[in-house]
Image (cartoon, rainbow, N blue to C red; front, side, top):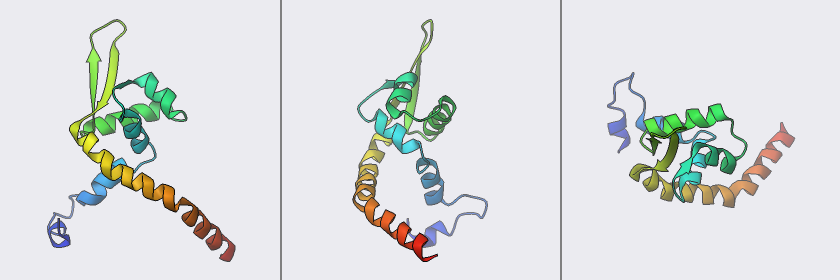
Length: 123
């Protein structure tokens, strides 16, 4: 969408680019999406695979990703209830640009870390 069209939005309407990037750019969303890439996972499987995320943060992240249409949550009427999470078509479509971003970050991390160190040394 050209910048001119973005400026046509009402002042109280969030910028579409910022709105989406703020949601998927948090600390945990990308990790959850990457963890779901191979297939459906249950809550505890996600907890184990991600490792250092709290139950509360994982729950909050899953709800946001479901709200935004990146994942689906399926509840099975069993005792105890079984809940599974999987990527939607939108979630799968996001994997390609996300992979490119992760690869870029991996390739440039050392350069960025060195720049930060130089900055700290000069200030």
